[in-house]
Every structure is written in structure tokens, then in C-alpha cells.
Length: 185
Image (cartoon, rainbow, N blue to C red; front, side, top):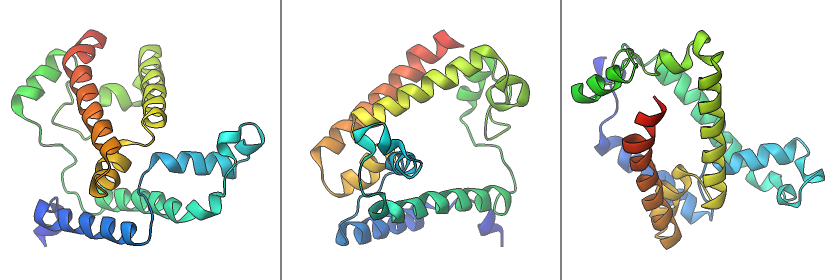
């Protein structure tokens, strides 16, 4: 039963993702998590204030099941299928993060320096999370979808705009981690 507590290897999880994407393409659906925010805002009545939210959200309710499945699956994986909550990080990366003040690097899944109770009340962390959230939301809207939608669904559907978006996501991530992250911390 030890296999249950370890990440699934790529040769099992990869074909499973490919199979799901094949099914979605065959039924004419696109996978993506950021579109669910639009659906939830529409359900809450945002269509009364902005035309962007005026659409038939019931046609997207299947994607809300994906969100629910991701939440339930994450809970099950974290609480029932994980013995150790530490992430296996390269020792050099752990050293770099320790010099930046992240002493929980390699010991916990989320850095407690950003996500514990005291950190949530710190104005610097609130600003970082708020600005980061706004930038991710703007980027997902500007790119016409999020990383999961473009990288998984768009690339499997051979869409050139998704390839361009994924390249942009990677470049943005590299700029963030190598230039902006050390400036912030």
C-alpha cells in the first residue's frame, strides 16, 4: 500500500490527462479553471452590472463540477494519500530560499512565512497576495484563459494562441523567480 502515498508516475497520470482531454475535444468542450470565476460571478448576478457576465452559465455547469472535483481531490490527496507534506525541492533551491528568509522551504508544502496566521495579517504579505492575484487574473483574462486551459486544453487541441500564451507564462515565471522575487524578498 506504499504506492498510494506517493505521487503517480508520469506514465500513469500523463495518459489519464490525455484521455480526459481527448474526451473533452470529442464533445466540443474546453478545459480551464479561470472560466469558472466568470461562471460563478454570473451566477451571483454580475450580469446585471457588466455585459461580460451576460451569458448562459448553465452551459458551463459541467466545468463547475471540475472545480468541485479539484477541491475534493486535493483534500483527499493532502489528507488521506500523503504521509509527508514536505515538497522535495533541490537542496540548492532550499539554500537560496533560506537566504531570502523562507526557513520552511523543503519542510512544508506551503511556506509558513506567507501562509500562517501572522503572515496573513502582515501588510506586506497582504499587498503581495493582492497584487499577485490581480496580475494573475488580468493575465488570464488578457490571454483568454489560464495556464491549465492553455497548457492542457489549448496545446492538446493544437492551438497556436495557446502555444504563444504558454511561452509567455514560462517567460513571465522565469522573470518573476529570477528578477522580481529576490527584489521583493
